[in-house]
Length: 400
Figure 1 (tube, rainbow, N blue to C red):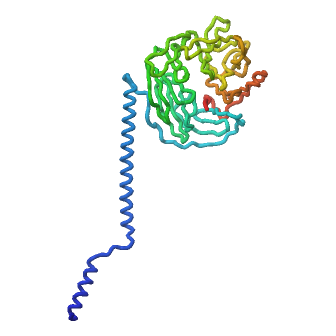
Figure 2: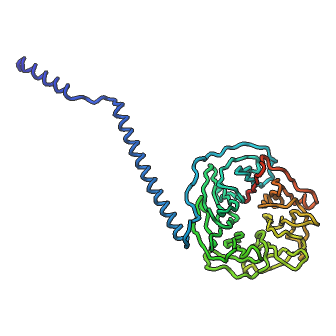
Figure 3: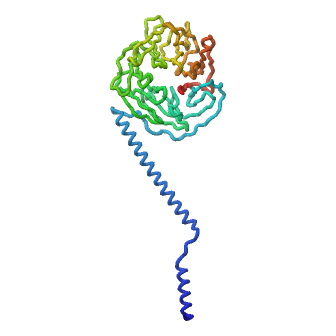
């Protein structure tokens, strides 16, 4: 090769190397751009998935409401979360008596739950509360709202502070003892549904007479009082197109279920006290099995049976004074005796063990009743609720 040809070849090679830019071994700008594109695509995919899921859930919920509601008007079942602003639960320790073994009751005070061990949880609420019990999963509480001009409500307070309304604008609402079912009055119908997580599923309804209200669950059935102004209860087994006939027309109140399934009720009689206790058989349309008279009972309906079915705490009179009475249901014969156990109760009575119970009196004090102390004639333990403000009303949390 001549010298001039060699020089031309070298020049051509160098010109190609200059024209073609080699990529850098590390390109930070390119990497950042590629990463941003990946993140944007990921967010878009997640947003699309959430949008589709939301559409499906809303569609399913509206379909369920449409199928469950056989009348025109605003549906009372609310699917969703009306308030996501506060999901934290501040905790603080307050001084409280040491709980007895097996204690599971707490106090709901103006939206604040105080457990028996002294732990205070500042819980958000959806309105004034009347009753509360833990969710079956233990992940929060079911709270029944007090009656207002707009009706009653049912909401869930989850352990993370999330409040979700399940019912609004309903009539009387009752919860099953295990918290897995709810029954409520809506217009001319009585409805039941299962509680699963934070949703109501499997709604069933039946027409009921004007004034009829659910009272409590009895196994898988709902006990219904046909008229609040007169005696008489019936059972409704969800799925049946009608309620049972009234075989016991004198029942005034029902206090609970014994371990063998019989109901302890208050019935109107011709006795001087005007009412006695009776055992009713739900398997035979509430037919009366046994009548037990003696104590002078109040007709306000406040009362609860102990977990072992032996004791009944019920409002009544001892002499001329109003008290909570302790009644031994295992006493032989047809005549019962009752011991005054504390001031009259308002709201729920919670048996924390088979021989100890708690309730709130008319002054807002927490009352603890011990069976042995009551039998010995000793007074109940009555103490103010810590932190109670004027106008506040503590609500006892019942259930396991």
